[in-house]
Image (cartoon, rainbow, N blue to C red; front, side):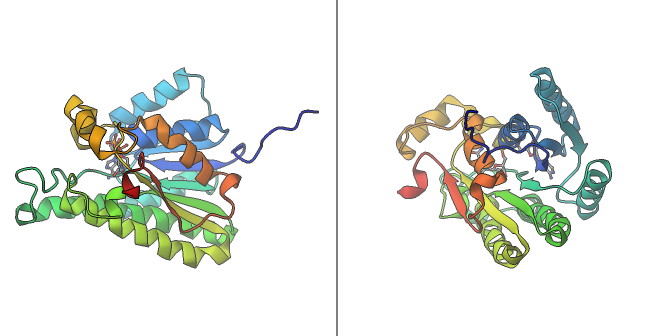
Length: 265
Ligand SMILES: NC(=O)c1ccc[n+]([C@@H]2O[C@H](COP(=O)([O-])OP(=O)(O)OC[C@H]3O[C@@H](n4cnc5c(N)ncnc54)[C@H](O)[C@@H]3O)[C@@H](O)[C@H]2O)c1
């Protein structure tokens, strides 16, 4: 019999991916499905989520469920995990991926510190920080007693260092979730739950009104990113599958940049 690679196989596993209607979350859901997991795709945009789920089903993938929820709402996250436990079982893999832009960075007029608006600041922290904490908390509650599980957070390289192109609330929220990941990784390690973060650089998704899809963004990144281009959403799949699977059994508390070399500067 031919020997085959099994360490990336997710057959029989249940995963939850938040922010799964679009961009990185959709790509993450797709690779988990391709690896054999059952995936609950979660998003606050019900219309976009329905279309995304249909496109995956049309491509021949099975094992996908959809759930409309706003991750910044405590009750909604609780209900989401209760529903999944009732219809499937406790998740093995949870991606806290949903996030929003805070708008302009300080290199753009209106993006300076003096212009930070408290409503926008609070909205971004509610989703990018509290939403991630609520998702991680719900995951920890079910995974800890079972002594197994993977929690993966989509942070950003904008949380690793200053980022002139990102808004203040965004960089603050992403720095905060990075330490949330480290803190939870230490607490949950003795319980067999691994907690890691992906720190993407620029990916062409719908974030910030699809700004990174514009030709001027591509032009700017040519000099800014060592690999000389913006990534496609599919380029998140390798690290997502690594962190979700048995291939990363000795990785916890890690913040892994997927950024074309940007954070190496
Ligand atoms: N695209 C990039 O360049 C980039 C870089 C670094 C980090 N990220 C992070 O990647 C993650 C995914 O972003 P993306 O680029 O795929 O953007 P996207 O806008 O294409 O997708 C984000 C999805 O999250 C959903 N969402 C937003 N708020 C939500 C909420 N409160 N509850 C549930 N769902 C919600 C949106 O409806 C959308 O479908 C975010 O955390 C973002 O900060 C993106």
